[in-house]
Image (cartoon, rainbow, N blue to C red; front, side, top):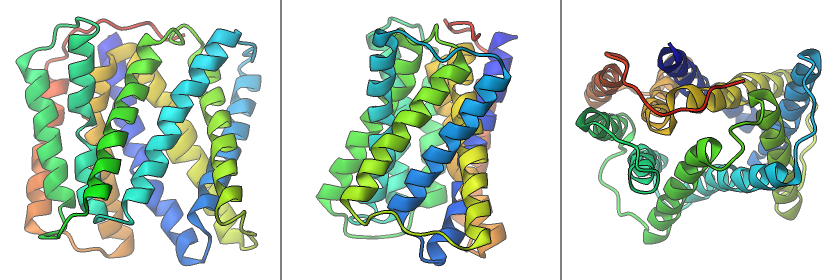
Length: 295
């Protein structure tokens, strides 16, 4: 039952993460800068998560050690988001996304080599299939790739894998999921605030539609996504959660086709089918994994 709940949380997390373009692209088209969007996204999400914690009667006090570990994990998380954005300056976004989704393989290797977790052949096959499926979904054709862009994406493959493993293995797994999510979102707001002030500054947001999109961006693909990610890792483990993360680009592609009239090729359909197969390998039947119960 814990694994089933973990799989459900993982699917919710990756699916809602894929809704980021739905709320961010309209703001970008209205002239709101990416640093501003990132800052407000995490500031508002931290406020929302804080209110949820207060309503739930949760205490915000954590030890200095737990706060330090949470901040380090946030650095991994924030650097991944920034690195992926910067990589778009050097290589096509589809290629960058494809390379980024090597992280399930890296998570599997880390858990197997350093934490001696037994992984079935099925897990490795599912990880590989998810990567291939994402490749078909996002590949943008023959392009001369900039080595700098490739190195940046390879670096964030490692940082995101470390973030996922760290949540379950660094000592913060005993912290209540809502409190841990709150601090990660709060630390992210500080980091992206510094990033915004050191680059373009904070843009003024005056349109009602932009504020609505910011609130939805902060709540659905940030609060819900990050909270369910933490719960998924605690219930189902790092490997299964990372493999099911392939649902994120799938949802993003669907959003692009339905809401932004982007093309969806035959190869995209092939990728969609492959991803569904990789998910089914993980979900049916549910495998056992060593996890930490969520609070």
